[in-house]
Length: 145
Image (cartoon, rainbow, N blue to C red; front, side, top):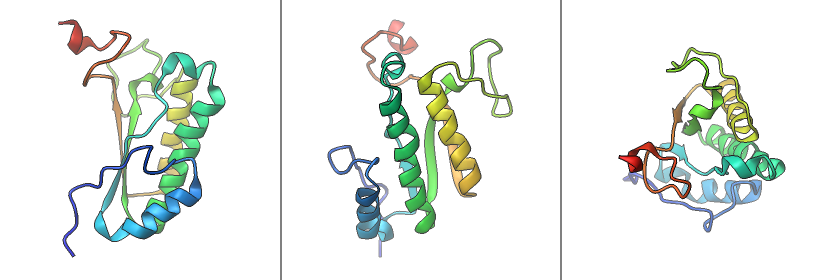
């Protein structure tokens, strides 16, 4: 069977915090892909301070659901984390630097990184910043030029 380059999925397709939905998606599609590139997240850093449980549920529990299915079906797991796992005091950072998350968003993302590191061997964690596209608060440095 010819595998697809990717299967686009968004929150309307299924809720990653729903384990049953994750199981069903993988059960119906597992033979069509080799890797999971996990891009879903609660990304509103400021609101994560007020919506701590929602942030944790999506970023930690939701990712855990995808991770379990990836392990079950032996899929590579690619995770987009954030440079917010660092406190900003000693950059630029390398992958060997010790994270020091300062807010709920960063703590949830770092907790997920640790879960991935302790669960699977076939993974890639990318710590990125907001560099692509429009960002409503105007913090994206590419849009300031």
